[in-house]
Image (cartoon, rainbow over all chains, first blue to last red; front, side):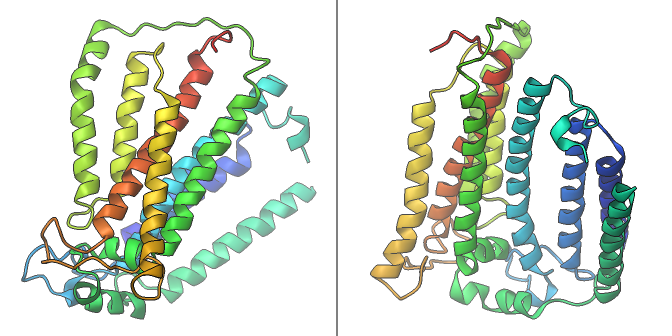
Length: 113
Length: 237
């Protein structure tokens, strides 16, 4: 249950950073927090009470003791994708700073609405 | 005003979906049918001890190929964004020399980081590891070298060759399985072997090694682009 609470809190903090903060770097951190919260949420869906990791490392570990492997497999790829997308977003921030000379989204003309 | 209304609708949708989700999936209770199927048939169908690896590379191997493509697209995007500005880049000479301990310590530690990353992706079908994690560890080793020696750069052509060979290995194994054996992409045509041995699970370890090399070279390329953006002088090349 604590995993659900933690995932919800991470997503809430990320949303706060995206909506309230004006600095682009802080908005990126908020996006990454939302990604982490979503990953934690997806992994904790697959948890089964008292289950072990889905690896047949010894003979006495049976399939019915294990947690669900599908959310873990999805999260495994999502983490790497999230890292590379964050790098791409950081590159965009560098370009924006080069062009406008500021990171404040209030002052960047094309991001104001 | 319209911005606040939009934010309100956006937040409402997210909170509503989260609440519906928490009601529909109580913690620690049920398991999806597809997960049960994978757990039951894993040893017989793939021979990999790690079920997560079996799901990632065997049952949903085509998704992983697409996902590696997304990774490549992101790395290429970073390279393109920083390349366009190379021509009108201002002359900046900013050489930072880290101290002696960082320089020597990174030289000592770097081979062990490579060894650890290789161990992680070679044993991806036996232990909780795999190509993505091992590749990220190796790329972090490159990041350490860049922080210790800001003036040096890796050879981007060699990185590109490694990355291309790894991608060709992944796709070629899938096509080989499609055209010669069986009738499905990424068909597991090698013998399954004995459970929990290093030569088991058919083509899964080979694919994970290829993914490890690919992820490592792509992340090293991203690190190289970003470090060059911070350190490189404009007159180079």
